[in-house]
Image (cartoon, rainbow, N blue to C red; front, top):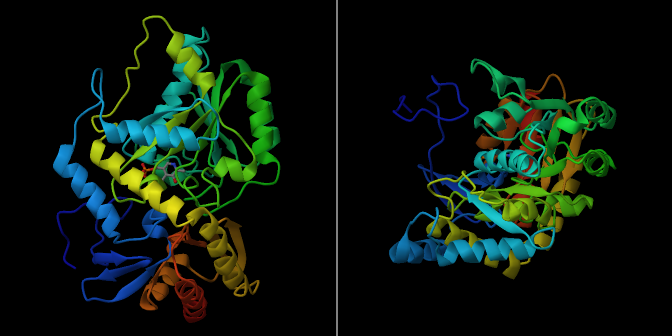
Length: 407
Ligand code: PLP
């Protein structure tokens, strides 16, 4: 493809070799020559219900015809925004929740960080401004999200990062404990993905998230679970925290809430935060996006959640987890494929040093499967939850064949 006007995200700017995808159906996507590929990462960890659903297109079209967009600042609301917040609050991992809506996961993270600082400030503790994240981790690309993201490449060339956002190694309870010992009265929140996703799929060590929760409680900090990948069925539960038995104070979400049919994200807010916000005299939340509560995006989310419930996709996720996990396990040979890191229906395949993940990605595309290479050493899988058994097996065969071909 010749270079076009489209400056692609997370891509070398001079790149011009793109796969032009024109259609999707279920777990398959089709390129402009009509060739099909199994979408082994649900696009970018989001298309839980699969592509090409007429029901979604109809819901979006109906809302677009009725009232495509209207803002929700100050005096305005609309039925789909009210309904999706009510629905998500009912599903929330804590009682009495309310929901703030954004357009993306990055904006959700930004919102959660601000809400944590605002809550402490309103509660008379304005010096609690530190938010702690982990390395590696991924929390998006706005400035707070970038600073929190524990991947050095995202920090290059952009000058100073946001102050008071600090990182500790993941799964290191001692390091986090030491930080709390030194600065506990200044820590507003800890943010953690239930499963570290985009850096390569790293499930938490047993007991780690519980220990983080306990440290937050001991020192008066809030726990933010960044559920942008894990929520809405990926781990067989509505929320990743539920899978690990950990309850947060704020949960960010995006991706699976609409399966990507429209851009939508948000933060589920617990009573611990709401009680402070709602009772602060004269306080108004000076934070919100033009498209917060966008009716067409919210209509898509409502239909997406209908489909997840009606088709039992939380349970289906466990089936996908087992069949794909069993298949990937058969490929581990201690040399070319070293390990399979798994949590629910998300997988990181750890490659040996002589196997390059980008080469594997290319060889898999030749075999009709799109998976994601990460950091040269991992190939990630996170397929639509409606993927068929035959398509799961095709993913496993394609990985096996690709690794064989490039090693
Ligand atoms: N948080 C997590 C855990 C993510 O995985 C992502 C995206 O992959 C984000 C935040 C950022 O979301 P978005 O790309 O929608 O801004």
